[in-house]
Length: 121
Image (cartoon, rainbow, N blue to C red; front, side, top):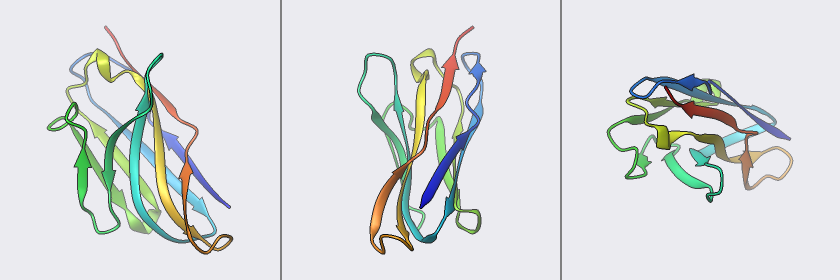
């Protein structure tokens, strides 16, 4: 089995910065795309950013120019650098990864448990 563990969610003031991390562990053969989603109260979960195994990135329009996604393949970890945060960025942030593991032998989407980001003065 595979586990994704997020960290880095905090209370931050508008205009501030923080970095989220998500580490994958378990019987991993290969990790393809990794991404971050978020869900605010009363809203549907939405894609924030994704990075492919080759390093190509994509961002939601609402975070372009403020957030940066990156990954460390040696550590099976994906990061989300969040700058110039706004109150509307407040949400639970979830990590997602397409993992080929030793159990299934095909790509399966794993999710982390979520980490709370609150932007407030």
